[in-house]
Length: 115
Length: 119
Image (tube, rainbow over all chains, first blue to last red; front, side):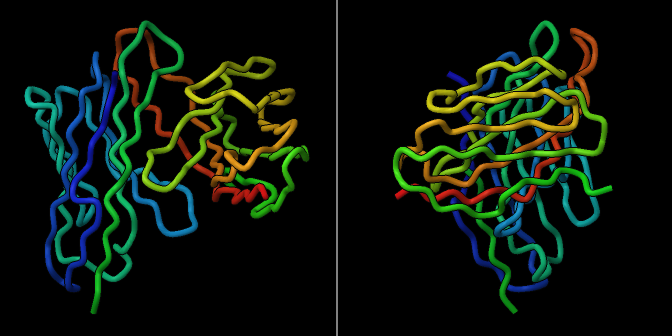
């Protein structure tokens, strides 16, 4: 069964500090991995996407890494800001022969940045 | 562009009542999806559509029906609401994925969600 597990479940950090969120997956055959940011009361918004041939992708202060061999990904947030407070969801897509690709969502890491 | 919009934002139903959630997108996307999000669980796919006039079941389709009569709209119906359907419902849309065997890099764009409470 395809699964995506994220850790930690929640995290509190001081403004300006860095943090790293983890994602382990068992989705097969692997197609791509996305990180989404979901603000409270809003829909998820895509931050990064990586295929099996990419091992790092940046979007501003967000840097995602992927190790397809160990089936692990991380999202590193640099110099955190109060606006980074949100849930971060790891989403893994399975490759198929065409058309809709099955996606599995993680339960998310809830990040709170405090002044 | 408004992106993906959902109507209503919040609704309270009594057990057994019916309702329809409306999703609209103005990005000319082929694919549309309905998810539900529950505490402690990842988003789960209810139904999806790969084009106008076509729908398919997702991971948790029981108790829901959908229709895609127009490309820009995707409706989610609850014929007889149950307390277990209390949830936050998200609609999403995306372009059609790439060719078979190639990287599927079509990002899903989500609406703001509909919070449904069934008493």
